[in-house]
Image (cartoon, rainbow, N blue to C red):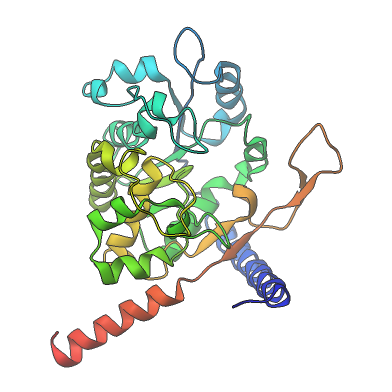
Length: 330
């Protein structure tokens, strides 16, 4: 068991490694000034009478206006525009049972709209173009504005390059594990008992931002994400039967996303170290910078930055499994 002192030491080590990553990133960024701009996609609720969410209409307008210069195109969807898309009738529907800590998720299909919209927009892009899905609630998470939008494309390509992948999603952060926020029912759907034990002890993947390149793997991953989100038992609260003592609450589509990421790691389709990094407070910014997390309180400050995380049990399990197959053909 880690003591408080050990945890502090570990966090400081991770911060130091993060600073070293920032230095390396600056070198990478200088070499990639001419990277192609990606496409920015977000979903927003409109409130009464349009839907049962918060009214984020003004936020959507602000997002489009402020971020437009950084992206090839800003794509905004709400429940009404989603329903105009072919196949949209299967997504973003209302369900009776709310999720703990996500009380409005059941009014928006437990966030199943996310892979549907990503899939829809991805298929419109030219081959190898990059789509960046971002959570549209910049009111609840005001710190999103503090992401390094001027250098966002260098960061995006850096993250995909380091992971040698067509997709990227971040670790939620230190101390957040799959066992805390992904239903056992969903885990059992994707993994056998031995795999599930390892995955449960791995770091939680956050679903607020999804980066995907329009290539064969990117399209297939998002299609699987969308397909499994159609199965509401995998993302709703109904299938929460008996959970272990570490389970706190589930997060809709994020359950499926976590399982898909770790399934692909175990199958060898994603690097065993994927996704490698997390960002403090979900602010996509490489350097350590003081910002106000609540702009009504000038002294309520946080520090941004990137830092690495490692699923050591998973990494060891994958390496041993590969060794067994190579040496003993099992």
